[in-house]
Length: 501
Ligand code: AHR
Image (cartoon, rainbow, N blue to C red; front, side):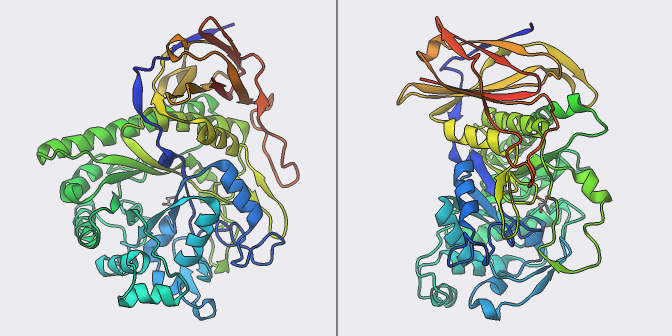
């Protein structure tokens, strides 16, 4: 049986475990908001119309910061439409997703929903069809305590306390031709810099995210970051990164190694940001907000008929049903984000409910967990203290897309306060169980508290409305700690978590 060796050392510290890496994303898209988190007629709905069965699942998922209200949607959005008496709110066309927007959920309702889920809001402003004035108005409405036209409007609308939103996105994917009002890097960099500077005149402590590339495959990737940051460096705090992966042409080996591309993406953005920083003689570092990442079967959606000439409310869009292999890749992407958490200091799984999401719902019916729910929820629950970068010695295999890939990937966290630790691993082999020996002597742990894996004989097994619990976590009884060495067996195409104490 092949064997992997891993060494865990407390000195191989990456950064303190940052709860913001377990963020998510709610966009007014398809059935994410309407018939997703919000369904007034549902038996579990509260007085605001929010489904409490979905709230329970969001809490179990452990998502922290939630990006809202888009995505592509935000680039045509007039925020004023979605506040005030609901019966007066206009219906608008959403050009991004070719659907109708009722505006029945807006900032004030969404903030109440966030309180139920215990999450922090990360709000995006529209720099597609709008600009500085609308961003400043939204900031005043959201964050100013009282005594001005827009803060008093919020109070009159039933929200006396300011929302106190700290993280703001300066538009969305402005490099993409699909974006309403997309721009060149030069135009966007100037607009983002002026918007950021004005917003910081209102509140210098805001944390602002400037748009980076929509993917590492964009023709402007790298140059976009350089130009945008040359304009905006001193005014912003983060640059965004977005990445979606899917299996193509039956090449599961390449798909399982998708995190190699995410690593390349992170390395390139960090190098570019630091290059601009040196050039500007700045002492400040710009970190990455990886505020859209996931598995998304985008090619299939492009070919489908779901975006057509009909204008409908909350159509079923981008409702990918995820397999075991998808969940293993998602677990590996999250491992990569944690490994880079010295520079990736915020991240959002895109998205949360129904739309390329870990949680699915049926109108009037059930809410259930997709396969991808499990690695995210366990890692959110067990990651504590500080992130440790393991030294991994493992076999390799060749991929068509990413070159040579390691069979096993892993990351760990260690909490010095209570002496507990957690190790997260994936096995990318499609045929072999991998025995992993992990030297944990330096951590001083003495017992295995929990060991679970996600795997299946059928790597394409999924959870569906009809079979909601077809795939779930399985206890991994092979995990054993002896003489400071943790041994665990990883089935083919699997994700595993081991908690130690
Ligand atoms: O998450 C789905 C879409 O993907 C978002 O609206 C957009 O920002 C990205 O292209």
